[in-house]
Structure formats: C-alpha cells, structure tokens
Length: 432
Image (tube, rainbow, N blue to C red; front, side, top):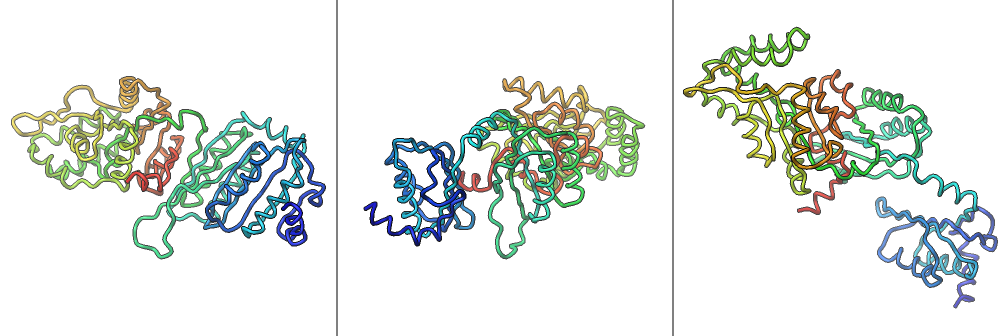
C-alpha cells in the first residue's frame, strides 16, 4: 500500500509546498501542517487518523472555515521511532484525493522554543463595531496594533452573516481581535484607537483578556437616553407646560453653574401640581433604545443580574422593570400627595457619586467583584459609575463623556454590548 502511494508523489508535488526543500529532507521532529481546500465533513478525522496510528503528538491546532473554504493548521511532533516520510506520504495521498492543498514546514528547535516562551505574555481583546465593516476599518485598527509592536493571533466574526440584498433592518457588524504582547504605550494606543473612531463610523473596545472579562455577572444601566430614548423630566415638563424653564435649568447645570442636586430640585419644583395620572400617560409613550429588549432577554437567559441605577424617577424605572425583567431599580422618587406631584423628591437624591455607590452595594449584595460588573450610561453623572465598573460603557454619549469613559458605543444599539462580552449572534440563535 505504501509503495502504491509513493507512485503518487510526482503528481502530489504540485499540491504540496515545502518551505525547506523536497519531502525527503523534511525530517525535523516538529512539523507545521497547513491544509486548505473546500470544506466537507470528515477532513479533520481522516488526517488525524493517519497521525493517530503512529501516536503522533499534536502540539497546537487551529481550524476555521470561511465561505466553505477550510483553513487547518496543526503543529505536530513526530518521535524518532516513527518513519516520518511514510507518515507524510500518507497525509499527502489523503489530501490529494480530498482535493486539498497541504503545505509542510519543518520547525527548528529555536523557532519552537521561541513560540513556547511567548506564552504568558499579556493578551488583549479588541472589538470592532460598525453598521458596515469595511477594509479601511480593519486597516486602521490593525495599523495601530502593529505600531505598538503587538501581534494579532486570531480574528473572529461575532456578527451574523450579512444578507446579499439589504432587507431594511438595522445592520450590525462586529469582529473580535485576540492580540498578544505588551503595548509600547497603552495610553498612546488608546488615543490612536479613539482617533480611528473619529475618522471612521466605527466603535472600538480595548480590553485586557483576563478571567473577569469572561465572568461578568451584573449589568447596570442608566435609564434616560440609555435604556429609553427620552429624558423623562422633559416629557413631564411638556405635560406641565414648563418645558422651556426646565430646559434653561438643565443648560445652566451643563455650564457648571448648578450641581446635579440643585438642578434636580429646581426642575422637579416646576412640576408641582401635575396630576399623578400624567405619569402613566408619559410611560405609555416611552420608546426603548434600539437593541434594549434583545440585550435584556439575552442577559436574562445567560443568568446575568441587571439593574437600573438612574437619576430618573422610580415610576418609570418600575415600568421598565416589569417590561424588561430587570432585577434591581435604584432611582429618585417623586413625592405625590392627594393624586398630584408636590414638586419635591422623596429621600436621598441619587447623583453621580451615589450611582457609583449603588453599583458597589448591588455587587456586594450579589457577592461578586466590581470587576464582574458592567455599567452603561450617557451623561456626565454616569462617569463615576462607569469608572468603578469592570467594564464602563459610554452609550451614544456627548463627546466629553465619550472621551472620559474607557469604552464607548456610538454606532450601534444596546445589544452590541453582547459583542463586548464575546457573545456571537449565532449564540442567540442557538438559544431559541
């Protein structure tokens, strides 16, 4: 049988590429096998069966399929007791009949030792998000990574397959880079990535690939302009006919003339006398942010705890809690007497610092580390909460807030947060 297969070698040489001379010279004990061709069931089984007959050790393996094209790499160690030429002939024979292209590269001792020594180096995850993924986006990101002396080990598409013809639904595109090495200047790297998001319609998240990234357990959301598309106090002000006055106070606070507590007290005072029934009417017309329902359903199915931590109002937080199945609601509460708003806030005001404290308290109640938390918000009063969370995300935030937060999403909906924790679109399809 071996003799018969040897007869195939002349024609196999057109398919097998040798980086270090002809097959007879490929006698190194460690070899890199690189296989490409049309994917079909059984290819990996047939090749590893040949290796398995001689008890050959697999040192590393990676396989992927791109549009029905197989890319398979195996690093193998062939012991001295095994006739390597015979094994390779069998591999070539099998690859030839499967219409595969097999490249065999000997790996010398120095190369192998250098590969082993690279383990333990820092690893990072770079997540690239866009409505449409263009080559220019990949070029911009990979150039920044290369300038920092980092190596991209793996690139994985997390988003679903885009349709050939636009179906009118919102598009999502996401790829995840696994990056190895220590950046020369991580601050400069982050600044360069941020610059890329200003030059292209993309978002980029840069995370250390540690154990906490894979075991997040709690996600906390701001409410107004984050979970919902509205600022509720503006909607109530319209109902009370005091929108302009409320807006003026908001602008004053944004200029730094008032802190959040003062601003909230003055704005709520203008709502005095508004019927309680108005709250239900306003709640009925609130629209969720794109992707909110999909995100919350996925988080719930994965066992995450969720929270609203907001300077907004309890009535609307409870409304969203019932609608979305949220576990915790921590918000300000409007005082109501005899069916009308008194123009006062009940209890302690939830401001920026209190939001961060509440995240810590809920994490403690759930007995999890802050590194296992995610916080999402859009305003300056969310920044302390975003800062203490393991993953803080500025969502469709104003430029100052987006620049201050370590991560931002400005192009996609809330459900794109799933990509930042490594969830693929197909994972959600499999959950159905």
